[in-house]
Picture (cartoon, rainbow, N blue to C red):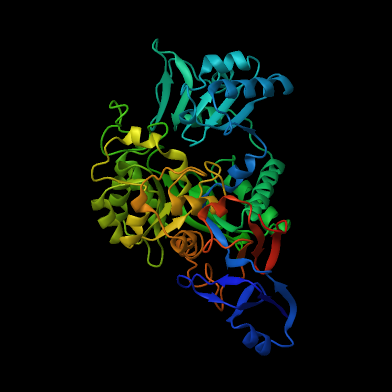
Length: 534
């Protein structure tokens, strides 16, 4: 017995503008799609439920191709600083938190972004000491490649002014050589190790909150990287199992395996005991560089606004080579964080040297700064680019101050990549950016900030079909599911995102409204929004 879906515009995403009148689902799969009268006749006696879409637009389920699912859930549990418009607001938020927490308890926050402040000064050690003298304080920047810590946090981690920079990291210092509390890249780990570990209940609460919010944003799944951040790969996998299977928070989670978690994951049998159509494991994740905000993304030439640096290579070349070889030894693809063109060049060299296993695809995560020669090399490889369209809205115009005259360099060049035949999948990098796929689609189509007119890189804008495909057919392709997910087609998963308004026939700004009517995973309605229209 199954469900007949009808009464709306059903976009299959098989090709631009292709629609069907109705869809019949059964057992979590699409059994048929086509004309309403034919489906009613063919499945007479089997249809036990009819879902009238009420004129809504129905799509294959939207999937975020790069996110940190538990990290997104933690945004509901930690001090959130993304809305702060000045350093003083950050310090005031810390001071307020200190007033309600017991003495000695850690104050954890995230999301600050000095590029959005009139005064771009960072929340350095001394200022945090004044705001919370009796609490260790740790505040992660929005990019998660930089954090600010106060003296109590540094002392808890055993860090003093004599400590040298760790490999792949930076401990910032003031003019007198004293640590100023700003830690970049691998230096962050020195303090993170001192933070009391999360409980199982905390992980499950964060994961459940994240999934419920994703449903409300129209997401039916996500490719997520969480296994190395919470003390134990195994306990993190248990949290996914308990929430997705045990608590039936149905969400298609595709887990990347950070290289630091790889050995434990292998020892745990590659997670075979918990694998299901809702929970699977993908490529080995590694970081090749940092982020543009903190000037740690590795560029091929110095930063225009700080010629003293070209960024940070997280791994020396021999170590990067070893990691890629290790992934290949275990039959795995590689998903490499590479924002700068210098990092992309390093990664591609090793992917070429150690070919991807047959039937699998490597990933270049972000790929924000590239060069034509690098794109030509990518075309010869089974490599996907995980792009984050919302980065255009958040990074411009300040990012051009970092880069300067781009010359031949390709800057957030999504259309160029697609025209060159490079598969691109769309994600948010949540909690770095908002998890909403609709805001990502808006950024890809308009190349603007929400409700603003300035266009950043007009020639790189995508059309609506291309932008929606990033989160449907292309995300499915990135996860190796191009034959059973990401389209409304017979035999594909019954995952749907249903919108009250049709973005193909309205101004793109409609995507900035709350228009998610329903989210469906495995044939089951997991979220129903409020009725009516905007």
